[in-house]
Length: 164
Image 1: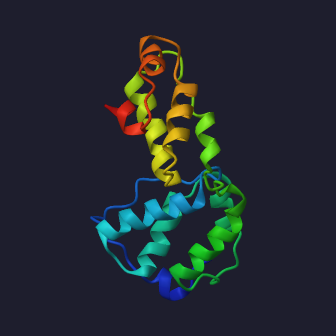
Image 2 (image 1 turned 120 degrees about the vertical axis):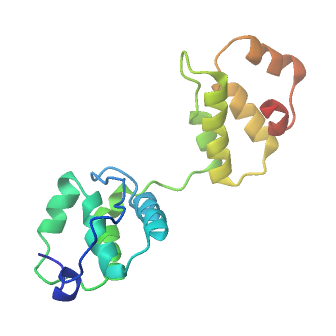
Image 3 (image 1 turned 30 degrees about the vertical axis):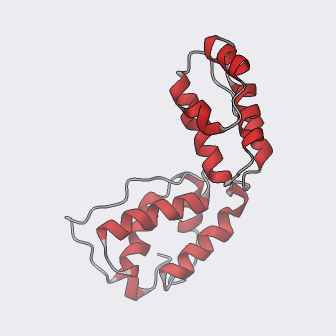
């Protein structure tokens, strides 16, 4: 087992709330670690417990990687999370850029509210203040229809006008 004896000796109560996330090897590792930390913050526990519970979130090639680590190799959660990041760094999502807004398209049959939420989520990640870009790319991504016609007629200048 890759954990040190001190970590192996830690007992986790059967009442302890285990994380409800999975990392198969294709997800963003930083998002996975953030989700894990959030769940562990709520549950509490020691860093040794974090080590043991972190492997519960692994599946597929990530679990194979963990099992292949040398015995006694992992001595802390900081070390474990660093090893994890180094192993799966190629999965890290590139930081979004403003022009990614052009790639957000409304799907056929997707409610306008859902599209607006997806688009808005990317706007939040971008921290952009370029209102003209947001308005233009939103109009670019929305399906043709009454709302699209309304956008063209009313020529919104602010994204907040569209959100109303």
